[in-house]
Length: 208
Image 1: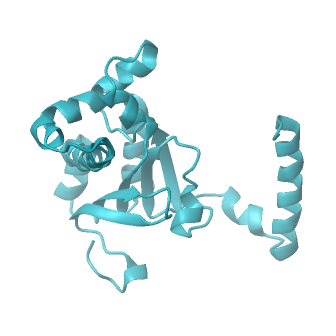
Image 2: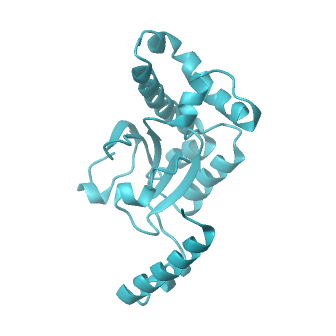
């Protein structure tokens, strides 16, 4: 069983490994950060952001919440978006959902008590909007998977309407929005939707 004490010991070991390979590893990041991406994803512990995207420290500015939602009155998410776009000048915002999402499944099951239930009403609204398409799917897993996808697409629509994104586009700031979904049983990321202007130099300058 992993304990808090073990995590602290593992941290010390990790620090020594990093310093052995690069004595300036930590001092290089201490001054500032210049990520190209804002990553908005679910809080699920099975999704290691840097590992599945093969990125390193300083390349991803991360915001996570249950079911990867972008809610118009969520000051936490909107603050992260504002800082990422206006101050860090990220060129890409990724909303990454995942199949097998417990938040989406809970929302499908009806009313949930407590603060989680209040939060998941936003998720349930997505299901209600697309109820005809979802009701046509007789297989429950297929319906669950499709709601995961529809949720990601909906959050991209929410992002498009935010003042921060609209202002960035109006000023000609390179910024693109990506809706991705992650499959836990294969480790594969899939793009569902992409809008905007930014170019990713790691993809030979192809517009995304």
